[in-house]
Amino acid sequence: EVQLLESGGGLGQPGGSLRLSCSASGLTFSSYAMTWVRQAPGKGLEWVSAVSGPGGTTYYADSVKGRFTISRDNSKNTLYLQMNSLSAEDTAVYFCALDYGVGALPYWGQGTLVTVSS
Amino acid sequence: DIQMTQSPSSLSASVGDRVTITCRASQSTSTYLNWYQQKPGKAPKLLIYATSSLQSGVPSRFSGSGSGTTFTLTISSLQPEDFATYYCQQTYDTPFTFGPGTKVDIK
Image 1 (cartoon, rainbow over the protein chains, first blue to last red):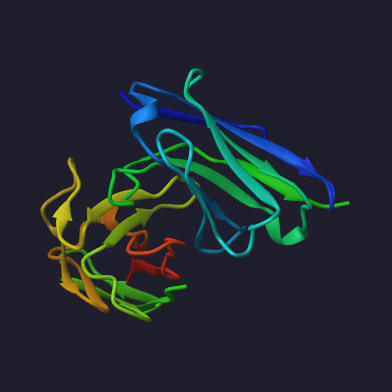
Image 2: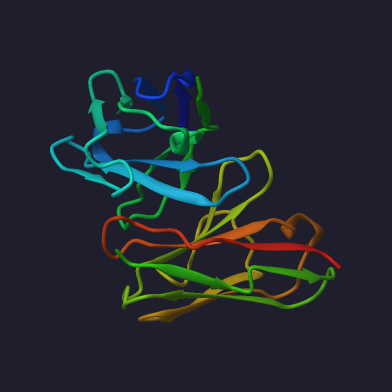
């Protein structure tokens, strides 16, 4: 059974940094692209970033480009999202999800809440 | 970036109703269009991928169709567990944008 478990959320300061992690099990992690999706309170889904299976190719939404960095450690079955220069607009539940190969996301974590506030 | 719109933004329906939700893209996404269902406090659930392929374990009352810029999700006979918010997502080109969602609630 595929399981994805996010961690690292919490309270971040405006202009500060947080690093999210997503631990995966039940799959050959390196075979699949992975994605971060976020959802601000009471709002819809926003695609944030994706990384290829080997980790060499990354993609970002314009809203986070230059501030967030996606990476993965396939030896640890773990996906990361380094978030810098945080602003209130980054407050959201962050989900990690597995890419089916056509961009569809059949497996999701439970989400981790990031709150940016002073 | 490809912009996605959905209509209606919300609808009220009764158990047993046939429900259709439309998703439109600002440019062609070929058939790279997926549908998700989300219930409050939960992660989204993939229903349909590549326009019309039913995800494993999803009831056959859900179906998808379309191509290019216009797509539809149809629920043939609405069940109590189907009251939720539905999102489309294009995966033709990054960023893989989502639609704004359609909330389906009980009439």
